[in-house]
Length: 143
Image (cartoon, rainbow, N blue to C red; front, top):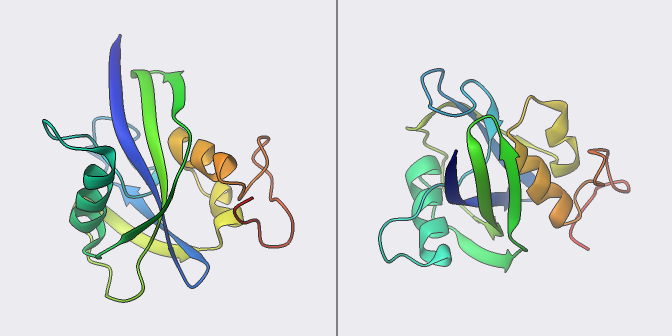
């Protein structure tokens, strides 16, 4: 089993979360909704990785608002360790290259889509949903 270490970014703008569909030929979770994030380059910090990946995947310049606790789980692809962040972009047009489509959704509604596990775990860790995947309060939101 392989261990994957990557960043997971909850990219917010005006209270909405950016989610993107992974391409059908992706190695992991093809065709599922995801958030921005990805694997580290050699010597890269988690913060630098998050900012780079967000730009590569969305075309947006972002600012880190808050880091979260490490998220670890095992799935069909091996062990996954995610470094989650809440990030924000105030302006700019989304431009997808690594995904097939995107949309802005209420963070508490993201689990209504077929989403990757780290997105659900990050939404829970930051208080947007309860650990059972249900909405937290009227709008969810960071604790």
